[in-house]
Image (cartoon, rainbow, N blue to C red; front, side, top):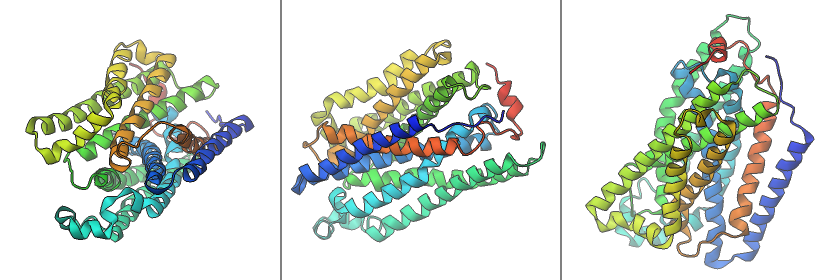
Length: 393
């Protein structure tokens, strides 16, 4: 019950090597591309920053949602999403730096001439302006980062309390209650700011939920991968097939949820056939057709078929396979959100696109493994621990 993760030198080396590969890809991108082509570097930086920050934020949401639902099934592996959530403050700083340095290359509405000569953008200027843009970032991201850090500290302090003392659990409930309302607005505002405003003439009332569904199911997949890795390494002895089944159910269910939201957004725009609305999909369908159909296969068809049976949700190898498919599929989903609006037809998959994610993967692994090593892997004084250990389906 007091087992502690050992962040071995081998894992540290793997993390550092990945970071070096990513740094080389980033440096190479700034050397190779110039002029208008430099947008490809900034677009990839935005893609990776938003996508990987979403994983950390999704893990924090997982913790807060389980608290407010009075859930107990995840207690035995609760330290996994906690550790992943600690990546979120680091990724927030990285994203902020990308937005500060690259906003001129990414967002058309930041150009003075565009605002002056475009009546549509001029009408949106009270919202789409840089001071308010960064104020929103600081307010919502800052509030959620603080809540995430407090949830982690409270969870660790719970380990030092006497058995039966629920004061820290009640404090966590309060923090989670603050986190969720901020998060509900955050997922909408940040989707509008960071992603939808890349196409400033287009909007969708479902866009925030669409992007949320994507990074939420990705976060569940990442939690599943880390949990299974620790289990295979001999840790998390209390985790059993029933806990894995629950994670499999969540990946299965929210893959369907993503499909529902995606179809609703697309179907309503297709049915109305209004030019200013259909242009978003026309560009992606016309110039990114393999990826346009590919995300449907990766994010719905394969998870649905591979996780349909009960036995599949209880198989480690099947869960690992589906989790990897989901992560790749939703990375491509975010690619389609960002690239058509920033680089247009000058897209591609080269060393930059392949190598840069290694930088973020390496940094995330280092942060997560470091966090796992700083505390016992099972929160021994959590009031729902026995319920989690006895979890059965």
